[in-house]
Image (cartoon, rainbow, N blue to C red; front, side, top):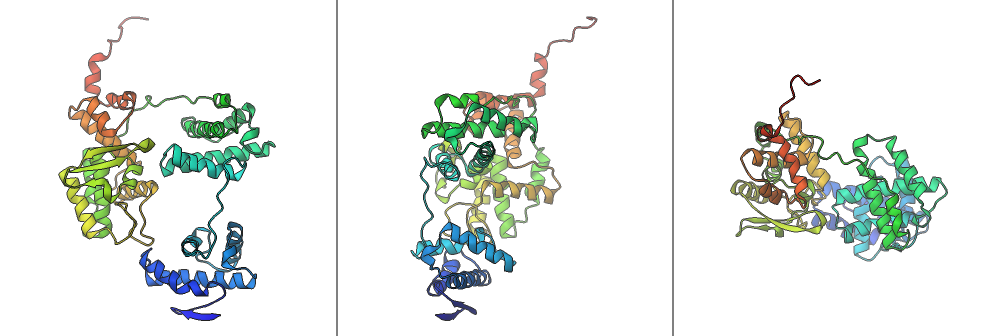
Length: 403
């Protein structure tokens, strides 16, 4: 079978799906015709390759997909990664032409353990995407480290493997980032304990990292710097209206990057003037929606947000028009800082700014803790060090003349 669709000549087993895939990209993913045509050419290449290798689309396993990616990478310069194939594979699976990805058994060791660990973090721990990716990355390095020592899978891990891995990581990390290793490692061992792969006491073999959370002073932006960030958003454009609304929500409500990314259209209660925030651990809490923040949000929704089936509030302006990730929110803050000439470390610095401004305005710690949705008072207490005027009377006089 040899047909031409939208200027692309297609032969092989995927010919019957070309027309549907093209309009699916236009209608569901909101791709431009030019971009959709590029993905149609990718379909044509995969179809020719399947025909030449005597395979059918019903045999498109992950191994076969990766084999095709290697072939395409050797001869093409665009759309040549596994990620580039995701829209096509998603469509083929939706119409039943390609098999669903294999679901691993949580008790099976090696690479399948990482997939089961990811599901555990998502479904049971309810962590945000950024934390899940970090935990899985550390778990992968730990299992690779154990494999080089002849230990395959969590079931064979011992205390000496844990201490060896932590010491090995310590040589390539600054001391302040040690918690980024031991916390995910502890989570992995607890997962193994729940699945019956590791003994209950093995998690105690993970050394504790020094907790220097209270050693520094929170780095907040000055009010004039926040104003510069907002002023540099060109609200005549869609991107400017979106970025202005996001920056305003971060700097007024103290939202985390992940919380802002997860905000859906249903989470905004316009009549009550509130938003429902999905915080850490799957908790949902309501915050008041200030008038200026609400106006910026309305301007973005009416004249900035592209048409998409995604229900999240803040979405990509280019195809695929899906919701922003927490990493994309942080990248937006960095870009805003470059435009305004403000040195900003990320979205969390705006959260610090909210707390410090409230403290300087005389707000009690209990109110700051409630706004920032801290579970422990000690987390909010770090901001007390910023109010040096209030701390000065507590300082004891220096003993003069004592040797």
